[in-house]
Length: 318
Ligand code: TXA
Ligand code: MG
Image (cartoon, rainbow, N blue to C red; front, side, top):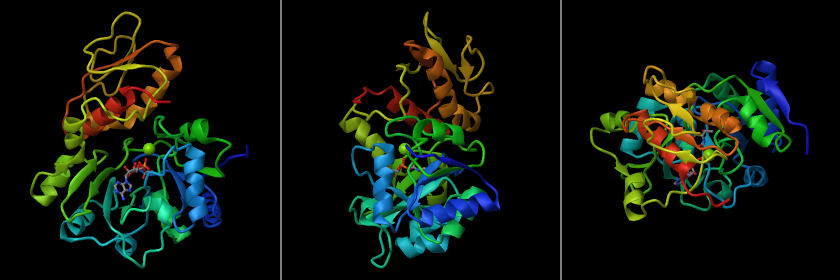
């Protein structure tokens, strides 16, 4: 175990975080979606340490974070539709997967040997300042142990990874609260790889056509086979209009039945921002009880909320 420094997100804290990253250390930092576990993407050993710190069983590909659209274009080849999305939504909660440029300096392990790389330009001002100061792409999966709930505060990060990483840069709670939406352009056509903090409808409006979805294809070919992820210790029961006796309740709208409400006004933006922190709070008080969750509308950010809830409720293999 080592001591994990907590850095305030001022000029000195950001400079310290950047220096640690440039030295090959792991530093968690805020983005508008969730806190990321950062490492220098050009340093294969630093990238390997990310998998070790998270206890990730497999080398899943990671997202490279850069401060500008120009820095992104230096890493991947953005075809016309990808450029349109980059213009409309970067910086922001969108990740684009596209063919890697041969000259891009990113460790092979960061993309798990794939010919494509996932790249994101986050909009959070602290993430922006940090990435500018590092001057290299920074890989960052969510800063939580593998399979657990993503962190939306620095204290969530310390709870899960304290003692395993050099530092966490604390800038308060994340505004969006759900991971970025991932759109793939591997074979030229836009494919929704993960619903997230940017509603798919906004992307479709920008492209002027519906997005093909890997999520939907997977659910049809393998119903109920969702990989357990984002999971609290307590069992979850979804689409519950009300809790059963002895259950805790996560409501949407009024009628919290003594539990918590993701949004009293039924606002999906507020619900997204609250989702992970409220799951943690209910999990901490569950003591073997089930958490029942109200139905969430399957549109806009509701699609991403439902995706995370289904994974959190999926059978565990841990
Ligand atoms: O909001 C977010 O995206 C956060 C913040 C920290 O930026 N990051 C995040 O990273 O959620 P992570 O590692 O938890 O999820 C990244 C996912 C991978 O699990 C994988 O599914 C997908 O991105 N991915 C990465 N590279 C890919 C590639 N080359 N092809 C297809 N999918 C890829
Ligand atoms: Mg994650």
